[in-house]
Length: 148
Image (cartoon, rainbow, N blue to C red; front, side):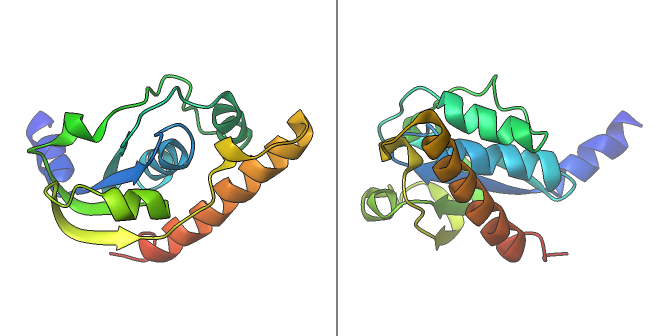
């Protein structure tokens, strides 16, 4: 039985989501893929300049039943030398500065605005985080949800 699990996990494709801070966008993407597409993928996330995981990102993911409260921000340096099927940049800054020496078989870019930079009331900010979350989920499902 343990051997079968090893084979199943060995066939999963790997994704590294990168944004500047690894505080919201890449954290939400990692959490979504690992919660909803884990039968085919294993996701990680990193930032070029890691910051603390956003409490608002944690809150809006919890609203859809995904717990990222134990996530921690990671630097891309933690992933040097590791191979990924996909390296996905989620902001234009990360695409421009993305260390292409990361061992990605395929590079994908789709820029999303950074909800951490938004200003407003708590409720206005949650609306912005929800929009980013929902837009990313639609995009992730379109790119990765259709693969067999």
